[in-house]
Each structure stands twice: as C-alpha cells, then as structure tokens.
Image: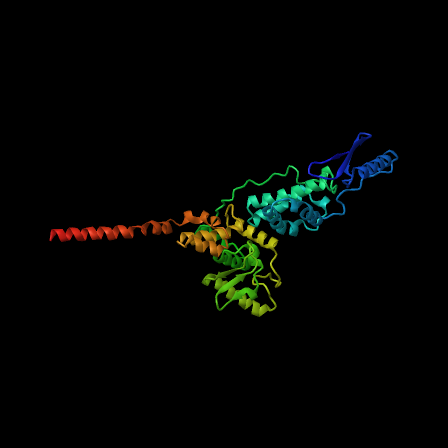
Length: 358
C-alpha cells in the first residue's frame, strides 16, 4: 500500500496475470485499508473481482463541484476567484457531459468556441489548466477515471499573445457590412458603435434601453459591475428600427432576435459572422475584434484614454493603454500644452526689448 503526494488516502497496486491493478482504497485508516486490500486480492484470486468502468455515472459538473469543495479551499483567494471565473465558461459547454464522453476532440471544439468569442489565450489556458488539475485529482485521488480517460494530458496550450489589436480599415468595414444579411448588419453596426461584447449584445433587453436618455444599461458585465452605455446616432438608428420590429411582432424581450422572435443563438451568430468575413475576403478577424475597432476608432479621433476605458468597461486602465499608439494627435496636444509658458515668456522678452529700443 502507498499514499500519493498531497493525499491522505491509501492506495493499492498489484500485478496479477500480467495486468496491473491500481486503485484507491478510499480511506486514510491504515488498518481498514489493509482489510479492504486483502478482500480485493481474495476476490481477484477467486475470479470474483471486476473493475467498474470509472466515471460512467459522473458528469463534468459533479467533478467540478467536488473540485471546488475539496481542492479550491487549499489554494489562494485569487486562485479561487480564477477558478470561479473559469467555471462560468466551462460549465455551459461541458456541464452535463459524462466524464467518459469528454474527448480531445470535444476539448478542441471548446478551444475554438472560446477563441471565436474573443477569449485571450491566457484565459483559455487557465481554464484548461484548471480542468487538467481536476482530471488529475479524479485519476489519482478520487478514483473516478482510469489512466486512459484523461483527455487533458499533454493537451497543447495556446500561445499567449494578449496584445491582439486587430481592427478594420474603412474599406474592410464597408465590405463586411455589405456581405451581411440585414439582421447581422444591425448587430455589427451596433457593436462597432457601442463596444459591447457578444454576450452583452445578445442578452440586451428592452427594459434596459432608454430611448429618452439615449442609453442602455448592461447589468451583467465581465467585471461584474453594471455599466451605462451612451448611444450615438448610428446606434440609435438601429434601436429605432428594432423598436418598430418589436411593435410589429410584440412579446420580444430581447432587442436582437431571430426571425422566430427568439433570442439569437451565439453559435448561429458565430457561423453567420464567419461566413460574412469570408465573403468579404477579410483575414484574421473575429467577432470580439469589433470591440478593438470601437476602441481604436475612439483613440484615432483623440478621445481621452480614460474615457475609452470607461466606455469599454475596462476595470484596469492597462487594458486600454494598448490603444494609445493610435492617437498621436492627442499626444501632440499634451506636449503642445507646454508651449503656453514658452510663448508667454517669449512675448515678454520681446516686449522688454522693444522698450529698450524706444
């Protein structure tokens, strides 16, 4: 018998008829563990022992519940917050899947989805690392899966490059909008003029729209803090057109809905968007990059970096500073402010010289 590192449980490992049998005895009591081991060995010799297919009755959600209860309390507070944040993305995708049905192909599908949503490689890597740790515990400590059922082992992580700054030129923007069906054109136009994330757009409800104030309220944001977004005339035109549709169709809670009057599915939106991008012959452009377009245009027009951060909902100003190189003219205003004292001093000197001449 033996104990694994960082585990209080006893394990057994024997080889019988050329087959290695290794399993948790599910107790930290050495005397009880020896008794359980002896019973298992007897059953093996008498042909009464068979291994149950591990993980056959456990879902991903159940695994992560145990992970958060038993492992998470052992890590730092910041890591616990990171785990909780990762679960918001992992559970909707893997939640009720049986552990044995989670394959590398399924994980690859998840990676594609998250990257299409605009997730940073570093964020995706944290999510994958968390699940990899959970599967390791499921294998080594909790005896929920076998060594062959660990799809996250040797799974390649994404190359981290969090300074992605892809934005559309005027020509690319025109081509993209021309390549879209009307419903998608309205969503893209609204995103380009509000900087909303995909989830914020699709979840926008009429109860959060103020036609009088020309604002919308985003209740659920990435940083958890509600934000009020002012609407320019382009965004207001979209809202007014959608408002007319609402009157015609009635009973629409969401601003952007499908032809059936239901909330637009994010997968359908992603497929339609990618098709439009291909039709417009635009390379390396994701839906989330529309946010970069929004911030970049503001910077190019000399909008203060702190205003951009506020409009984009960036809690950390460092997230916004990547756009500072787009606003050389606003930087010029900063250095030209120093000229005031120079001009005044120069004029005073000229005045003194004129007095001496007289």
